[in-house]
Length: 395
Image (cartoon, rainbow, N blue to C red; front, side, top):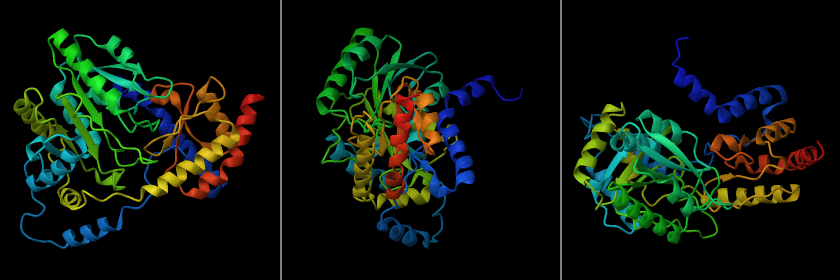
């Protein structure tokens, strides 16, 4: 076998979303696209805001010498300055351009962070439910993940986190608004988490970094505000992208930012800048850096996602599902009416509905539904959800 054993194992662990995607393709070919209700992928379908196309056209005609050349590995200084100004307001901390690096999306940023922080065997705490690729990003750089569950409403369980902390803990990785639950962690709970990590660092004579993955920060509903993470502890790193709030996932543009008072700041930023290069990213895409610098105050039409959330909640309520109403992102994460979430997703498929089993996110007994689809897809799925519930109860 030519494929590495580890990659075969990873492929199996990450297969649920892929399996649903492949099953969806088969079903659409057999029954027609309009007859399949595919909620498996978190791929934004809301178009980028019109300002994006305007800025892109303006910048694309610039043919001055060097416009497509290398820039500093951390990104154009003026772009980092624009991002820093936005972050300073969001995080309530005096961030400047030297605290920011432009990256190839949030995924690239997380790999840069892990490459820069982890020695072999260092532990990273991730909170279930979680984005499945966190495991792989940590393993890429010799780390070990420790999974800690959130509470019944997917909020931080600080007692469970404290119990999981050890002398090997290097990072606690959080994602708010969360994929797959849509939960937003409160300012109070983040403050308590920061205090907990600082105390544990003193106890173990180490530094424990709070890393916040925030690509859904601007996609929130009902007037919800995502609180700053950097006010919780000085040892904070924020990573994000423009994949969701500008609907640019394929452009691979994001950033990371460190707290201005983070421990060993100069050495850490030097390591991150080097990691950005040696991981093969070299630098974030030049054209997209220039574009997002002009769009710091622009976001997709969030009301579209908010309307779809309500449509989907109405459908699920009518069918009798239990769920925590998401405060952000574009997912619902209901409980399955039977214990086996894989079996229930199979029942959904009989109704031509595609969801992803919760065990793929470290939370068996749930399933994820992405509502970045057209309204009519959600509305026409209603009978199928009711039939699937009846089938599950009467099986």
